[in-house]
Amino acid sequence: MTVKRVYPIFKREFGSYFVSPVAYIVISIFLILAGWFFFSTFFLYNQAELRNFFALLPLLFAFIIPAITMGLVADELNVGTYETLLTLPVTVTDVVLGKFFAALAFCAIMLVPTLAYAVSIAFLGDLDPGPVIGGFIGALFLAGAFAAIGIFASSLTKNQIIAFIIGTAICFVLTLIDKMLFFLPDSMLGFFQYMGADRHFQNIAKGVLDSRDFLYFISVMFLSLYLAALSMREKF
Amino acid sequence: MIHIEHLTKRYGDTVAVNDVSLNIEKGEVLGLLGPNGAGKTTTLRVLTGYLPPTEGTIRVGDSDIRSNTLSIKRKIGYLPESAPLYQNMLVYDYLMDVAAIRGIDPANRMARVRELARMCAIEDVMHKAIHELSKGYRQRVGLAHAMMDDPEILVLDEPTSGLDPNQIIEIREIIKAVGKEKTVIFSTHILSEAEATCDRIVIIHKGKIVADGATEALKQQASGRYLLSVKLTGAKAQVCKDAFSTVEGVEEIKDGAPESGQVSLVLSCNANNDVRPEAFQIIRDNDWGLSEFHRESHSLETVFRELTKEN
Image 1 (tube, rainbow over the protein chains, first blue to last red):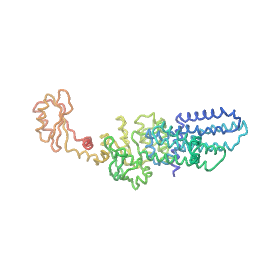
Image 2: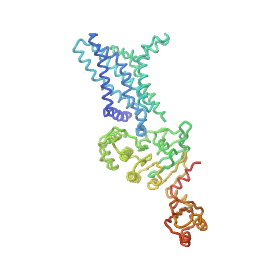
Image 3: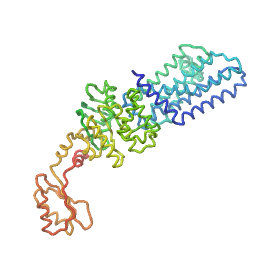
Image 4: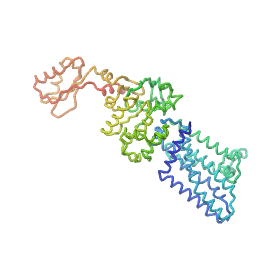
């Protein structure tokens, strides 16, 4: 019964986000940036759609989400609570999953206020629900992938700042890689195109639900969490 | 109950624990002694499933630490050194969470946490954040954490380090009370503590066991000699030394702690001779003033120092 062990870890981790001011600060920064970037150009385009919001989301997530996850493992290693936690009857996998779902749930909470954009735009004009629903689903998968990467980065070091920088670097590369493709030889184009998180996310955000895009995000999550568990086991 | 078999743990090239074998019976209170860096913490960390052994293994009951880590973790309550706990959580929340992770039935969690709070005397701080607590309280919260689901084995890593004398006694009382029914293993480098609480003492030095035995037996092992410390006034050191060296049973005479106007000597004597009557006769005959005259048996401290001397 892994759920029995993962759930208490998830609950503790999720709860601890909200006892410190960090959660509120991160959510505020996210909403201010997203709101400003989106609405500053929204009325110029004069289109009742959220496409611009979803277009900038990967870039925002690339540094907001590593900030959310940076302490998850690094801080435990630093304070020593890692030892207290792992000598309870839990496995490393339980811990990684608990923390991952806590981070993902936190990202979902962070996205909830942005549903207000969709609602208010629906009042302004004729909003096509497909891309909006797709966009929010895609945003959750994107957040999951970046959170997994962030946890991996956090498991590498005791220092939260270093964890944040590593996490952001990986997320940025995945976000921007398909915009750097013209540097690369043609033979490698397809591979690097597939590596880019942005393209997969934009596909889903168009309302096109292709299994390959979901598969991409799910594999990033699995791989990152697997590497995180590996690095946590190798800490000794 | 616990069988440590040829346990070796290496970190890179450093050997922290070197081929240690040890059997611990159910209900024993075992003190793990040793200087800093001797391998105490590493041994405990392997036992609690935090570190994998490099070679050898540990069995608890029928389970092997390599293949059955989880079931061993269930049997063991562990308090790491300096009680690392989540700083910004309330004591009550923390203990409830531990109860949840330990798989205690939700209906019983509250009752169990209350019971532990009473046992560890932390009822007054249940509503406080852990970072607000004093070291002594934090250690007791850690103890409550370790004892959560009434484990068969309690492992404590230096549970009294950094505490004031009153707190040390409180923690010892708890250990003693628990030790009546459970197996308790704790590490310390305070010898009097091990002497006061343990049934059995194991001394580790440079990753190896150098002594293992009941507390009393260990003390006797080194009691081939005893010390007689003497402080005299109105005497000359050399004259005193010459006089005392004629007494049968005195094997060595050293200078004691210096004090102004006094001759301070420590006589190392063979345990088979009681040199006191004769020594006192010498003092009387010479008409020296006597300000101190007492015998010390070789303590655990001497045993410890002998066994863990460098080189």
